[in-house]
Amino acid sequence: MKKNIILTILMLTLSLAMMAHSGKARFHVIIDTDGGPDDLRAISLILSCPEFEVIAVTTSDGLLRPEESYVKVKSLLKDFGHEGIPVAYGKTANKNESQCHNTCIAVKWGNEDKIDVPSAPAAFELLKYEINNEDEPVLLICMGPLTNISEIVADESLSSQISKIVWYCNDAKAKSGMNYEKDEKAAEICLKSGIEKLIISSENAPGLVVDESFMSSISNIKNIYAGKIVTSHDCAEVKEKISNKFYKLWDDLLPVFLIHPEFFELVKSENNITFIQPLPLVNSEEQIKNAYFEIINSKYSKENKVFKSFPLSSELYADDISADVDEIIARYGISEFRAGVLTNELHGHLGIYAIIGVKMGIRVRQYFNIGVDEIHITSFAGSNPPVSCMNDGLQVGTGATVGHGLINISDETVKRPEAIFEFKNKKVRLRLKDEYWDLIKADVQKTIKDNGNLTPEYWSSLRLLAIKYWKDLDRMEIFEVTKIS
Image 1 (cartoon, rainbow, N blue to C red):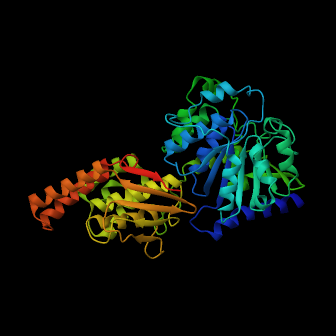
Image 2 (cartoon, rainbow, N blue to C red):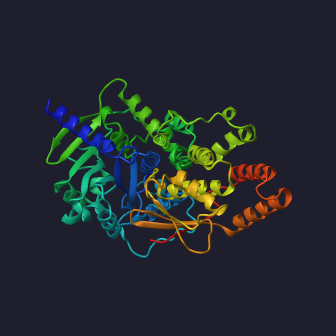
Image 3 (cartoon, helix red, strand yellow):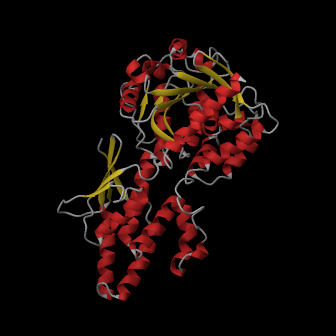
């Protein structure tokens, strides 16, 4: 009875945060990883889910060296377009490499070109900075040795801002296993602290295996996060282990538990350490796997406030757009398409700069990996068309509307398709590259020359150009992205 009461309280604690911030991230998390394939899966799962806001990622000395994991994580975030999530590596704690080092290093997390490793570890400095600048309690999701986390725990001014530590370990006392043994001193500091520790294990669930069937189900989910899991695991070293059913849901079980605690049971709880396993029911393993697939496909689940689901069928759209609907969605995703539709309905016509604003707004949300209504904008597009039309797209793409007081139009004399975006303690500038702006201006001038200015023929030609740019311009290529702070 006592265990059931404790688990009920825990489940309520995990769910009540969502009620306080409807439509926004439920968990404000820092991830610490040692670079294992299960960590890649877990991080992809977390990044795909709107319930999580990832404040920062740090790397510890475990399956890979901290510097090696740093490169892996940076390449993953770059591939996802989430470069705004800060990363730092921690100190080396072990003399020897792990036995799985060669397998882990072979896993391709992303494009590692032009990723420079800082000259010194800075995990503690990053953790301290981000925790101090976070308004919400921080949840630490730990996927390796607790070296970095122990430094935070030892600082009372920081540890008081930590809500929980979530860690994978098969020992109910959390005093064995690779994550413990790689840095026992750090683990003991964390385990003895007053911070609540949730220790998750899949030891009692032999069916939670990452096998060919599991990978096939992931491959059927068509988004960048599921695709990354599939392509990263498509190397000889990993495929051999998958065929031998070596991999289980280990660290990737952590986000599944946080989103769906109802599929788990509390085994033991004492001294701020709660040991949790999947429910020992006939269908619990299948439920957990289905929850896993649901989470990784949940990116856009909170965007609609009026629609049950946004209309995506091409036959619902105007004749000159319907032929391109499927291609636009396939290339740029539902979120950009949805914002494009809503913007142009609001805007009163299909506008080129309105589309640019949409793409810029979605790109900056992707950069920080955040939902709508969480960012402040200073736009340099002015208040006079046509460039100012970009502001409508920015508002819909980000949710930073005039009504929310989140968009400001700069009074600088020179108007241009550019904006500064501020999210918490971070600022970034996005600017339409000159080659694309020159192309747009030339096309608009030709339209005026051929049809006259603001004539019915002008608007018809402009509409076709807007559709063309909507379809052809990739938000990952058309903007200069400059980090300010």
